[in-house]
Length: 98
Image (cartoon, rainbow, N blue to C red):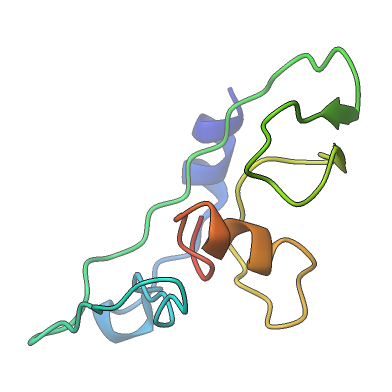
């Protein structure tokens, strides 16, 4: 239902206004990827979930934290000041588009 509402309310945009996939280079990788042409178009997908709790315990010894707060999963804004960017980059997710 949410996807349907987003599609119905979306205003038409020109091709050059579409949000493109862009992730800054990952500081934990020795290699980076650069697009020769425009990067692929970024598509928004919304999934509703029933969370058991907002606080999650991480029992993995390779993470630098034991508990984390998960108010949402994923992001479409790629804010430079986002608190989740360093952990997304560390977990090898896109820090700018995941």
